[in-house]
Amino acid sequence: MCGITALLLADHNLMASPELHEGLGMLQHRGQDAAGIVTCGNKGRLYQIKGNGMVRDVFDQPKLEQLVGSMGVGHVRYPTAGSSSMSEAQPFYVNSPYGIVFAHNGNLVNADELRTFLDQDAHRHINTESDSELLLNIFANNLQKIGKFRINEEDIFSAIKGIFDVCHGGYACVAMIAGFGIIGFRDPHGIRPIGFAKRASPKGTDYMFASESVVCDGCSFHDFEDLRPGEAVIVNKNGVVTRRELVPEANFSPCIFEYVYFSRPDSIIDGISVYKCRLAMGEALADQVLKKLGPNHDVDVIIPVPDTSRVAALQTAYKLDITYREGFIKNRYIGRTFIMPGQAMRKKTVRRKFNAMSLEFAGKNVLIVDDSIVRGTTSKEIVQMARDAGAKKVYLASCAPAIRYPNVYGIDMPSPKELIAFNKDEDEIAEALGADKVIFQNLEGLVVSCQKFNPSITSWDASVFDGKYITGKVDEAYLQHLEDLRADGKKATFENTQSPETLGLYNFNLQLK
Image 1: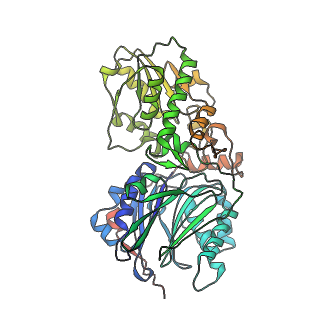
Image 2: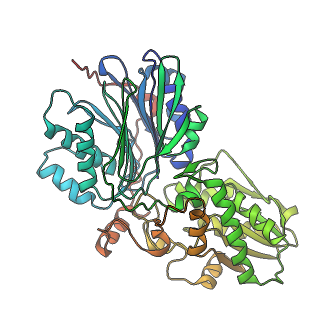
Image 3: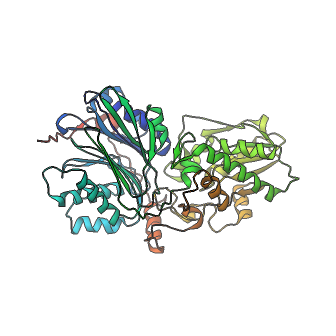
């Protein structure tokens, strides 16, 4: 899972890098492995800084001042395929044709097929294991075949349509063509989110693409619009916007896990408030608690696992008329454990991240509410911390159904054996986690919690819950390949010796005539 953004300013004398940097900070929850920005200055010259680490580690004021230009692309990365090396940091760039910068969120299910095509037919060198580089080179190859000295919007739409024809999976992308403008597009199923917004300025109108609306809100952009599935939007350097749905019969199926966990609660995605969704999830979860524990339950207090589950837990407590308390205090300077690479690191981090206050647990029967239970790393430690703090009974409730299947569209939960719910029923899961009982939301309740706010969405990617992969091309052989590629024990662990400080500034010196 990654975060992407792109910005074009109407005033060509201004620099896009400060707001791109700010936007990446607001997307930090979507990726903590690497960050990068590429900008475009006068005469199509490109400037780049990227590296491993969080946004605050990769960028400082002197580096931002080196990122010259009034338009640019930014990316924060969490690796879902390949390694965590510096070479995987985005945005990516190719100089031919036209100088293209590219950033992507998602995952392709036919990457091997595309890699073979690019090598044997297109004769384009792929330097990393990243799907983003494949998408970039498919795009570049499609533009190369046009063979024009200068391209226009029709040429770009044709090249993106070519991507949709051969690239299968979930992906949201932003691109920049040197001296031309910025581009955003979304896969034909709309699995991964992306939208764009505008802002009036003295020189005209500024435009921004982002994974989540909160980025545009925070940078004072307005009229945020989600891209439709199979839609591409082009903003040229003069601020002229051209948009087109290139796959008009697309089966719109956004990822439901965005609303459960990944997106910020103050974001609106596909017309749905994430905050309202989580309130509804809390109400639906209350019904499941009553079914599991009965109306004469012995729960004394409801405590959320900060931060994502707070909204739902509060609504669960309200509906059940049970006291809500903040029993876990979070260290805000430690990242999200789910998106940390490596099981050992996740487990080690949990107790550093949370501290249980005994005064809220001692002598009480506690219902702990979490957004989801994936590997069970956090949940098991949380349950034990509650017991160590004096809880008599510990019930654990999940706002999402049991996760039993791998995700192939950009979420790093590929190996079924890593999932706590793999081949277990609820009692076995509770025993594995050390809880007295575990309560899961059902899939129908989760879908209703989201769909009620946008009834026009009738299909969802819920593959981690039901094992149904809407794009096709996902069989047992592919899932085994993905497991082998991404399994914690096999994922590359080497560190790049090049720090963000030594990475410095890359000036591509691409000058358009």
